[in-house]
Structures are given as C-alpha cells and as structure tokens.
Amino acid sequence: MRISNKTARVSSVVAAICIAVYIAAIVFGAVQVYIKFGERRTLAEREFSDLMDRAAASSVFLGFLSDSFKESISDFLFTSETLAGIIITGSSGQYAVEREIGSSIIWNGSSPRFRTGVLFSGGPLNLPLRVDGQRSVSVQAVFSYYDYDFFQTVLRNTLFVILVALIVALTTLMIELIVRSKTNYSYSGPSPQKEEESLPDHDFDIFIEDIDRESNLREKLSSEIRRCASLEQDLVLLAAELKIPQFVSESLFHRLNDEAVSFFSMRDLVFEKGENAISVIIPGMDLEEGLLKSEDFCNWIVSKFSESGLYEEPILCIGLSSRSGRLVDADRLMTETYTALEKALIDPDTNIIGFKSDLEKYRRFIKAKEL
Image (cartoon, rainbow, N blue to C red):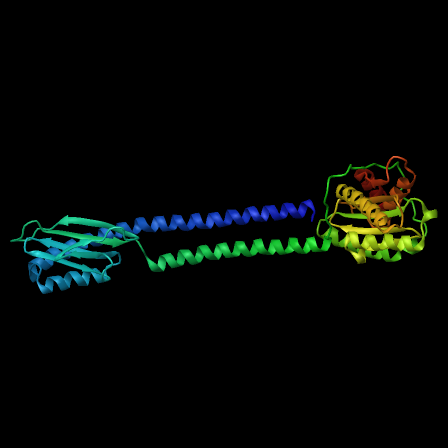
C-alpha cells in the first residue's frame, strides 16, 4: 500500500519527535535522580554529624551504653530522613539499631555488622567518639539514597510525558491508516517503464464533448479535489479505453468496468465513459505513481481477459492527469485527462500518456481569467 509522500514525511517527523521525547523524558528523570542522590548524601553527612553530637552529649548526661543512652540514639535514628542503621562500639560493648529489622544490620553471634550490597544504600560513615573511661569508641552509620515520595513523583512525571508522546504517535498512526484506507491503492511487481509526455500546447478553452455523460463524475471529482486540497494531497484522474472499438461487445465493456472496480477497489470512484471507456478517480496519488498504476492495470486486463477467453490480447489505452498542487477544477482535469487519452489512442509507440502540466503557464492562465 502506498500513501502520499507528504503523509509519509509527516509520519516520519512525528515518529522522530516522539522518540526524542521518550529519550528526553528518561534522561531528564535520570538526571533528577542523580541530583537527588547527591542531595541525600549531603543530608546524610549532616545528620551523621548531628548523631555524633547526640552521642557525645548522651554519653555525658545519660551514661555510655546505658538504656537511656540507647533510647536517645534510637529516637534520633527514627526521626532522621536518611539514616538506616547505627552501630556504636566501645571497650565496654556494642550497640546496634536499624530502622527496619534485618534491612541494614546482620549479627555474627553478639557482634553486629552492616549488610553489603543493599540496593540504594550508602556508607558506612565512621567517626571516633571521645568518651571518658572508654577506649576506641566509634560511631558508624549507613544511610539510604531512596526517597519514596521523590521517586514516585519523578516516575509519575516521566510516565506522563511518555504517555502523551505515545498518544500523539498512535493518533498519527490512526490518521495514516485512515488516509490509507481512503486512498486504498497498491503497487506490486517490477517497476514498469515510465511513460510521461507533455502534450502539445492547447488553448485553455478546450471543451469536453458529450459532457452530460460525465455529470456524476464531475460532481464526485469536484468533491475529491476539494478534499485532497484540504489534506494537501495529490489526485489522479485516469481514463481508459479499449483501442479497437469495433471488436468491443457490450459484455466485454461490462467486464472492463467490473475489472476496473475490482482492481482499484473503489466502486464509487469508477465511472463509465461513452461506449467502451471508463474514468477512475484516484485520491492520494501523483502522476508518476499514476503511470505505474496504469501499467499494472493494463497487465491486469490482459491477464483477466485472456484467462476468461473474452479476448486474446486486448489493447487498453490510458490517459491521465493529476492535480499537481494546482487549484484546478474538475472540468480542467477532465479536459487534460481525455486529451491525453485521445493522444494515447493514436500514438503507435505507447498506450499510456500522462498529461504533465506546465505550472507557470497554468498560473498565467488563471491570472488572466481573474482580470
């Protein structure tokens, strides 16, 4: 399935932006966590300094390793923001306390030590403590980098940004799928030779004969041109006719019509034209793609007609033109397409002719009409 180049470019740009947003959100969240780790370590060092002051004062007024001393140290631990475990060692014994039992300290008999490899754990911080009557007194503490409220906020904000970007990406994908379903055309197989020719200059007042037969086409074509212009899409009008009309029976022409509906998969955009021709509106396709599509259609008709025995090798001639970014009306596009078909019917070298518009000439024509 092929879509217009502009739609593909928009999808690519949106995808790139969304990926950049994902990366930026993750990197920004990681930077915030890194900064918070530094702040937590600084706070832990300050709280450890306060702990040393508390331990020194308690040893003087409450007695080193007395019950009141231990209670004072325990209270300090549970009111701190970062400290997770404390071990105080002196010549008369040891005292250990942790915020959550088994999370920071393990015991080897009666000797405590800090756990290693604990996630988000820092330390140990270690300083000597002067206590009268005690030798080699030291205070150690480990702290936690983890701040539940902070991590929850960062995670929520990061996921919110990623969710918004994901919604944008999915919305773009849905729009692209809708555009694809509306254009609903495909190309497969080897690339055929592109046949594109600028027709000889014609005055811009050419009229289409027997235009009453195209009344439904004109109304639908005008509607599709307006829709494609609003979406900044191209549009191709294709006209196909069997080259040897004297051999065309009514059943053969109906088969041509049915095969066109089957091939282009757009029943409401395929129209009869005269006795043995059809017109097809193809939104979302430019002239170059239309030439490729025309070659595929010719091969399709040859294959289908030969298989059914209707005609050994039908010759289908095709003329086509495209909007090409112009503010063109339905009559103008029909004129260009049918003129290209007339040339294809008489050209001995090719059965597919694409009308390549001269934008400058067309602008001069439109400007002259406005004067």
